[in-house]
Amino acid sequence: MSPNVARAVAYIRISDEDALSDGDAGNVAHSAAAQRDAIEAWASRRRVVVASWQVDRGVGGAVPIAERPGLVAAYAAVREHGAGVLVAASAERFAHDSLVAWLIERAALTEGAAIHTVDGTVRAPAEEADASWTRGSLDLAGAYVRVLNRARTRAALAAKKERGERVGAVPYGFTLAPDGLHLEACDAEQEVIDRVLALSAEGLSQRAIVASLAARGVVGRTGAPLQQTQVARMLLRAAS
Image 1 (cartoon, rainbow, N blue to C red):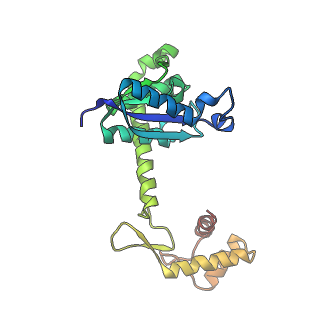
Image 2: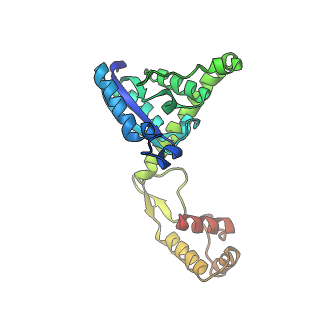
Image 3: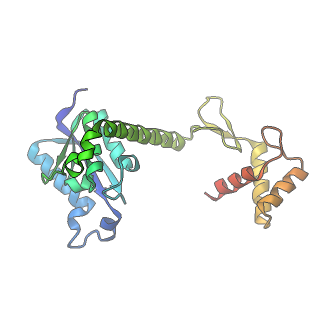
């Protein structure tokens, strides 16, 4: 699908400071509602269809791409809808940091979209802020690709986990379902976990729990007695 300049993906960013003072006279322009209104008015004037809205909340202007789930989703929406534009209310809504802004723009161009701002503001090119960035532009280009790939991997793993599919090794207490994707409870291991939790509730230390399990002949998957690190992981998962 060729990028369509009459189709856009909108990006809204709200920092913690914006959220705390949202609605105040000095900050109302940074509210999510104000940013959306501005983008909708811009789209109407330009006769652009906004195909997707993506929002990052509690994200500062210097936060990199990989730590902005909303921005990562915006790039995915650009690909999905064949959008030729990634738009925000202003340049600072994309980034406060010149290097981050440069990386955001390069990532958008890689996906086939140009960066636009409703108010027409632009951030100074990275090479103007630091001449060494010009010399290292190839390294930066590779860096942003690696960052974007890591972000996509995180998003894919999170989606698999949300669907109940296996991510990485099969955790203790579960077994792999016949479909090879989902997890099923392992009754024998769940009984061990219940025993660990009960002993912890009685006030036993992790070391004492390990000793109690060993005295009962409880072993792990390898046939060896359970170790304190395994007990600690069980307690941590139960608490999360």
